[in-house]
Length: 458
Image 1 (cartoon, one colour):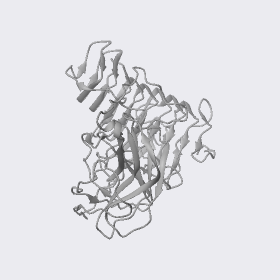
Image 2: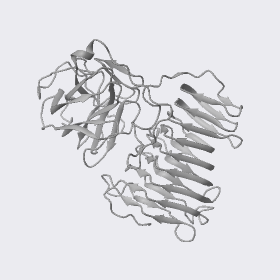
Image 3: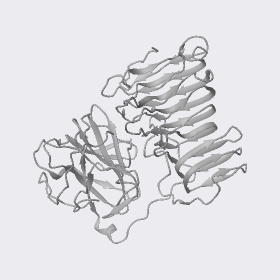
Image 4: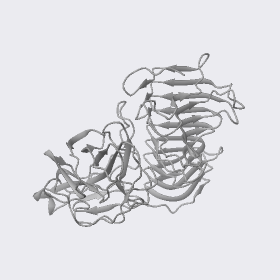
């Protein structure tokens, strides 16, 4: 998301009368603290992820509109389930009213305790209220909980399920929730997931609902060594702070959250599943460097999500929300290799969505393969979703005669992937794919745009 402008307004307790207030939410009687008018003018869906602890119904949505002439009224509000399916939607007419604007659904929607939902609004011209670092920790009120990193967004030409995160921001949308009378007195505990979560189906690309630490898992602080020298070490259901270095073979990390980075040396190997890696503001990759497998892992933050030299598999995972230091000349990426072999990316959601810094810094590609230090070879890129973003390209395929090893890209298969057109109509700023090797042992087939039209190799 863009850095907020200097135009700031303190919200008062006034509530717009677009619809009568019928129920509570997380913010229903609270003034908005230091909400800032974001300078972004791009069409965007903005939301909040939440979970009820008691049974009840969602009656509608509330969106906070700042009292400044530059603020824009959203055009619609939508309630989504964890799979990204729209459960209810309501149009919002343009209004000069400010404060909390409430829009009710035509029919209340029943919500299940312990399940995750997203309430969002579509801002066709941007200029919305935002507060960075608001969701650094979970917030609970009125039988609802918004987890850390609850604020989500996605750039799109029409309303769409928001899944990207940026600096734990709050975009000031709330659900109008009414607890059922039978559940208000006795909260229903969140269900405990099975120990072997079901992988996402072929049609359900990885998102908030099927990557990261599963719902209901209680994390405890990790007290073990940050450098793993013991083979077959297992870390389960832990909150890990700092840089985790893997030097031993067959290390397993599952159902855990890393607030820092993970580095796998050539002497070690790692399998990480059902976990979250938050790389923060690091200039390095959140996960690197060889001999690892990621399954159902959400990787967010850091300049690049994943860096790989050799023997890396990323499956059913979600790479997004990279960090770009304001004013820097950094180049960010989703999955990055500057040379190497034996890489598999299968059925992931891939994005490089940090915005340009204004000083030459920008995202390069959601998948960036460069023959800088070794040839790119033996790579499979299959059945992934490439998210439209402000990167130069969504995929850079490794064949570039201007690179030291750029002519030697071989045995690269790019098959069955879907590229979102987005507002640019071409996925990235310049296009969807570039530097793709064709012929010989290389394959580029069955790739499409998100409207179903074939995408041909450049």
